[in-house]
Image 1: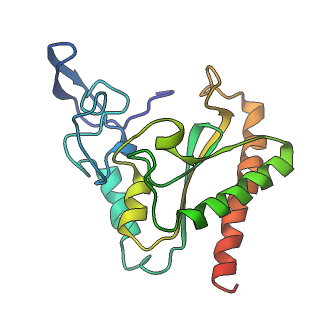
Image 2: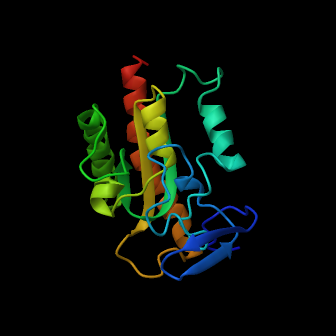
Length: 205
């Protein structure tokens, strides 16, 4: 279904203080379902009819468990240097952490320096300007995200979210025209390549 944000989890009913009744809807926002500052006290995360419903408990969904198990598997242990999650939309390069404003990992300066290089590479490619920072600082806090969990629970250094164009101030921005898809992909690669190059440099490759 176009623009369906959540997975297709069976219908779940949650009490709503706002509406003073149980609300029953299907689906969980997988990018709120990770065990990182997970809580259901903040509306709309506790409302099963919200697009951002976290689910009944951390890793309640098979999709988020699959990512967790793959990232922490022996196959990838100490073999992964970067995780880049592609989202739409916003024209942002997002760094951890996103659950609380002004809260950063200890190597935030390193992550920001690489993000700035990625931003500059995109600007050089086509002039588009990206905002960089945490989602909490730019858009507002969001708990239970995949990249926050990965950054906190693994030794993977470079963890980013690329929010693809158009900018987060645009209207109807999820409805991107087909002819714009390839230019957006090329634009994004110019930023992603900077992170790949940094990983290669760190490993003397």
